[in-house]
Length: 476
Ligand SMILES: Cc1ncc(COP(=O)(O)O)c(C=O)c1O
Image (cartoon, rainbow, N blue to C red; front, side, top):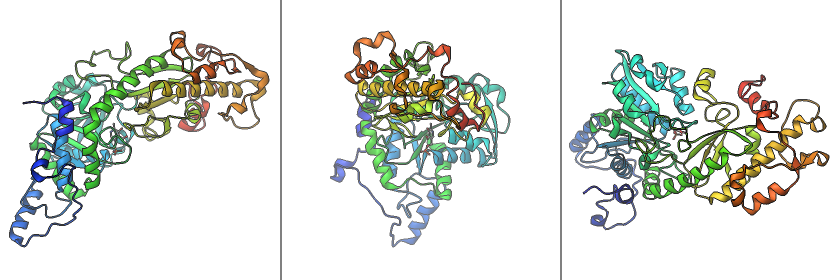
C-alpha cells in the first residue's frame, strides 16, 4: 500500500520503533563501536569502503550512524528513491555529487542552468574542484553536452528569482548524463525530481526539512547504484551529518507537509498583494499569472511554493532595515519569515554575468514566507515599503539631502515635517482588508511619492547598487 505524503512524512523511517519499544527516534552519539570479533569488524569496514549502506557493525561514526541512517531512509521514502545519503550541509551534498559524478568517473565537465544558489554557482565558477562549466539556458542543455560531461546541474524553483526549469525536458536533453536537481525550494512535498528522470535530488536540509532554523545538513536522494559512490566520498572527505542533526531533520519531516502548505498559502496571498503595491516594480512567484510560461505548476510541482522574490522601486536594503516583524536573515524554510538581499548576501559571489543572467538586480529581495499570520506579515511589508519610500524621498528632496555621501535614513524621524503629505501605498484592491496597523500607516502623514514609473526611486537605489557593484550605481 502506498501512503499519501502526509502519512509518509510522519511514519517514514520509523517502522521498527514499536518493536524496539520506543516512540521517539533513537539518538546514538557513539563515535566508535566496540566489537571483539576484529575479523568481522574488518569485513564491515571493507563493506563500507565499497559503498555499502549497512554492515554487521557501524565500526566508526564516519562510516555509519543509525540515527542519520533513519533520516536517510525517511527522505528516500518521501522522494521515491531507493536510497538517500546525508551530508554535513547542502554544500557538502552538492560537492559530493560533483566528486562522485565527475571526479570519480573522470568526466570533468558540467553543464549548469542559472540561476543557482550563490554557493553552488561560486563553487562551479571558480573551478575549485577542477571542473569546467558551461552555463546554458534550460533549452540549450543538449547542445552543451560533451563526451566528458559528468553532470547537469539545475535548481527549480531557482534561487533567488524562482524561475522554473522543466526537469523532464532537461533529463531528456541530458541523455545518459546524470542530472542533479536541487529540490531545496520545492521540498518533496511539492516536487519529486527523481520521478521525472533526475539522477540526484539534492536538499539543503538546513531549510524546510529541518524547518526551525536550528540545524545544518544536506542530503542526496538517488538510486542505490549511485548512492555507493556518494558514501565512499563521504567516508573519505568526512562531510558527515552529525547524529543530532540527523535526529532534528528526521523530526522536522513529520510536520513538513503542513508547514509547506501553510506557508505556501500565505506566500500566494502576499505575492498578489505585493504585485499591486506601489513600492514594488516586479514580483517573482511561480503562482502569479504569467510567471510560469511552461505550465509547470500543477504538472511538475504540486504548488508554487512558499518563496517569493520582489524588486523594490526604491532602495531594497532600506526596506529590509525598516522591517519590524520579518526576520532580516539569509536562509529559508524556517517557521519564521526570513528576508534577504541576494546581491549583497546569498549571491554576492556570483560574477556579474551570472547576476545578469539570473536576474539578481540591486533592488531584488528574497523572502521565505513562514507560518505567521498573513495580515501581520503584510502589515510589516507594507509599512517597510512605505517607510523606505518616504526615506527615499527624504534623500532626493532638496530639503532632506545631507552634505557628503548619499545615505538612506530609514527612521520616520528623518522625514522633515514640512515636506509631509498623504500617500497611498497599497493598490485599491486590498483597501478592504487592511489591518489596523496598515490603516494607521496609511493615515499617517508621509512625503508624497510620485508614481514608480516617474522614477523618483531610481537615484536612491544607488545605496544598494553601490554596495553591490562598488561605487558606480547600476540602474535597476
Ligand atoms: C537552493 C540551495 N541549495 C543549497 C544550499 C546550500 O545549503 P547549506 O547552506 O545547507 O550548505 C542553499 C543554501 O542557501 C540553497 O538555498
